[in-house]
Length: 159
Ligand SMILES: [Zn+2]
Ligand SMILES: [Zn+2]
Image 1 (cartoon, protein in one colour):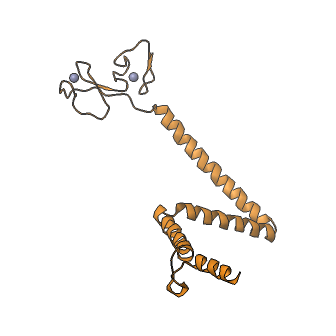
Image 2 (cartoon, rainbow, N blue to C red; image 1 turned 45 degrees about the vertical axis):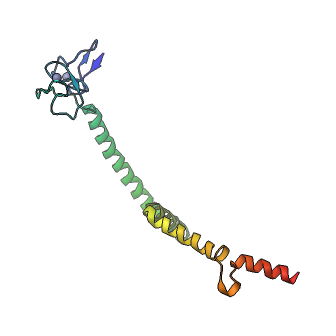
Image 3 (cartoon, rainbow, N blue to C red; image 1 turned 180 degrees about the vertical axis):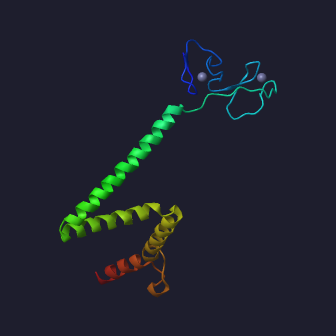
């Protein structure tokens, strides 16, 4: 069975075209019924430009439903935000401060995740470099030893 997303007609079997609106299903068909992908303008097998109109990829009513759902969701979010806002106005100062702190932390977290990856990479690199400076890099003032090694030799010398 094939179902036409354009007009909603269901056809039994495996037809090439919808009998109601004449669209092909998920392919573009030339008059010789060579199947071509949706994006082609010319049949890849015979060169015909007389290609059929395929049915839409997504059913029309699904798109409409998605749109309605998105609008409803926006309204819902708006109402919730408004409700929370009013609730905050009614609560004591301490609770407001707590919520503000929560919001602040959430914003910081969001900012951190929104930062471009390269910026995070630079921070990681800087942190790693500092670690390298203290642990591995030899220093001329410390007998060309890395600071941790030098500290160890001092401890050993004292022992
Ligand atoms: Zn149809
Ligand atoms: Zn063809």
